[in-house]
Amino acid sequence: MKKNLFRIALFSTVITALTLGSCSNDDNNDSENNPPVADGTRWITLTGSFPDAAGTAGNGGSRAYAITPENASNPDYVVDLFKMEGEKYVTGFALKSSRTARVQASADGKFLYNIQYTGTEGGVFNKYAVSGEGKYEEVGYELNTSVILGTSPRWVKAAEGIGVGVSFGEALDPYTGSAPNYVWRHPKGKIKIANIDLNNTAITNTGNIDINLGTELEAKGYHVWRADVPVLNQAKDKLFIGLGIRRHDINGTVTTNTTTGAISGWELSTLARDLGTLTYVVDYPSLKNPKIITSTKAITDNLSYRTMTQYVGTDGNIYQAATSMGSGHQILRISKSTNDYDNTYEFNLNTALGINDAGIRAWTYIKDGIGIVLYTRSNNAGGYVALINLNDKSATKLATDIETDAALSTTLGQFQNIGVIGDNVYLPLTPAGKDGNIYIVNSKTKEIKKGAKLKAASGSFFLGAY
Image (cartoon, rainbow, N blue to C red; front, side):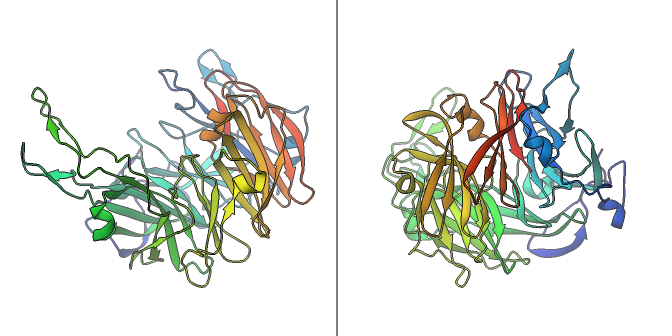
């Protein structure tokens, strides 16, 4: 239940400890917002998605289940997250969301964070304390971010204890005038931003960016269509927001449907993209002074479907996968000292693996330049794992016994999070609708082992580990 909806008419102003929406039923404050796990167990939360009422795979919502690292490494341990009795799920915990939840977690695994995606509660932020298996307790305040970000925001944990939500909207029609004398107009639009204090469940500031790509790019038909994957730099004084870019054919023919009145024209251009990867940078926490930085090493968008694509490295630089939902194979670097692209650097997954068809689906930075990548291949069905070294630009493919299963590509296309504890990486891999396992990678020895069994169901699969 939500009440006291926040009425906002300003952006780019500090809103100290602002609470949107209502307190949850277990309204707590201060220490009660962060109840400790009684026995100090380091839980690993596994999440999975199930089909919607129409049967669309992975589109109906998310469930969570927490296990210990010991159980995760035990191939005889079974997680049956989608077990049902009648029409009711009986294992795990249902995270609030009309569609698949966009889940984030604290580094120690004690808390999950989620902003509900679409529906009547779309845009509502919830925080959960993790106590094991299906024991999740909603804590803190329930925030209604939809008045700022809409009901389908992109959001991530941009740094420990700090969440940032972004959304793109208010784009103009790409034309003015009336038939038959239509004139091209750049869509422009705005990126709206909300800073979220994850520890105290409060919105601390909001801002917006009036899109301006400059006359040269706009004259070529380029425009922004999405904002995504915000991350803070090491100094926490700059926020980097990924951009989706499209290009209209501004010389196309415009027509009007005489029956419906619908206008068509200025369709997406078939011209080759000659624009590098773009990222917006704003000051943090003020969310002011927007600036676009451009890579000369990649021409793929910096955005994702449901996973994070940019991380602060041990060396303080930001490492960013240039991938538009699996179409890219490069990792770029943003310099710690300049807060701009280091255009002398590029990690190329194809080159490192000696192939030519890789598409990065999810990845995470582990430490000291080592990362792990989940990728698909356009010339080979399935889903694959590689341990990468961003320092010497090498990669080691790690084999799983399900990597050639074509249904795994669907899972990796919606994968959300790779779990890391120390040197161990936890990958819950289930081909869509099929059983699988947790695969555990030792990032130092490059050894991969099969752990706990994961039971799937029709239209369901596991999405991440936290």
